[in-house]
Image (cartoon, rainbow, N blue to C red; front, side, top):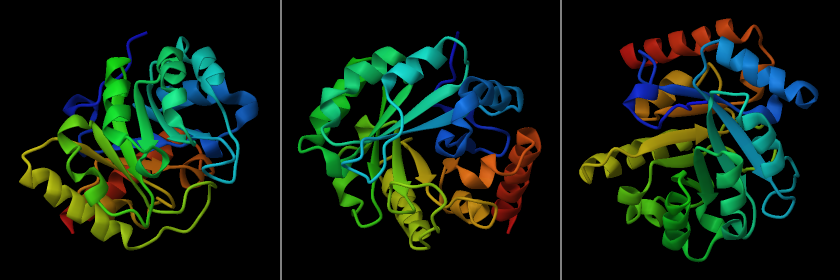
Length: 236
C-alpha cells in the first residue's frame, strides 16, 4: 500500500500536517483507530516508542508497527524515545516506518545515526528535548527531513505545553531559511486548539496531538477544528 511522502504534497490546503499520537488512542482497537484516522482524511500518524529508560514509560515496538503496516496507507511517523536507538533502526525500518525520529540526547554519533536511517530507506528526523539547544542540529539540517521540537518533557501524554517552544520553532525556522533548506518542523507535546495556530504561524509544519485529538471524536470533525484554528492563526 502506497504511503504518503514527506513533501509539500502531504500538506493540506492550510500548509500543515496533523499527526495524531497513538499514545492517546485506544490500544485495544489499534487497527480500527488507524482506519478511522485514514477515513477522516488524516495523512499521518505518530507512533511513540518508549523503552522505560530514556523516558519513564514503556509503549510499543516494531512488531506492532509491522502488523499494522500492510493494513494502513497512513504515513508512519515513528518517534523513538529510547536509549541506544542505533541498535533498533533496522527493526523499525523493516517494520514499515516511513520516517524515523531519534533524539539528539540518545546517541553519541548523531550524523552516523541519521545517515543509517536514510540508508535503510526511511526518512531521518531528529528530536530535541525542551532543554536541548538548536545548535545540536544546525550542522545536520541539510541531511534531515524533519526536526521535532518537544514542547513537553517526553514520556507521558496529557502534559502542559511549554510556552518557550514557540520561540524555539521561530528560531529554527529562521535557521532553516538562512541555509536555504526545506527541513520540516514538527512540534510534539501539549498541542491543542489553543496553541496550534501560534505554532504554525511561527513556522511549524507538522503538529502532533494526542489527548487533545483522540478525546474529542469524531475524528473528521476534530481534524477540521485544527485546520480552522491554523487558518485563523495564520491570518491573525
